[in-house]
Length: 168
Image (tube, rainbow, N blue to C red; front, side, top):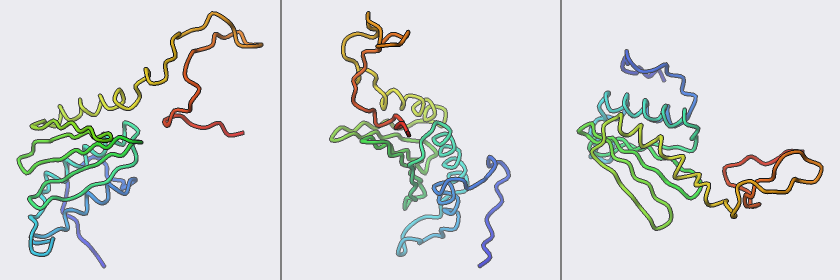
């Protein structure tokens, strides 16, 4: 099957290196009525904007993502990181909203432009990696580790879900 995609002159270098990126791009194939007679065609500008946001998400190191088309032409991009869930939705108007859920807690910001949504992306790391969760009282000990010239840190010994395991 030979599928012709609409021309995107200003889309940043398309590589489809991430499955969600390919999924977003393929929203251009959805015709009016794509969901059992309902569903608007997704505007090309919305697809371009969603691709750009997804690229920003991936550049920040998040790879567990997905995307969903909305019936009114909106696009939602989701990020899953541990117990955290983030949803970024581009509305038909071109504005963005951001939702952060963890457990029963949920927070939504709406009416954001693309620059504000990127600022919100920059704040995600502080939500995910709260160093105080691993703090036990002292930041640098007064005794040295056996045989080591370095000072011990008083970090909790539990493994962070964001750290890599040692491979021996």
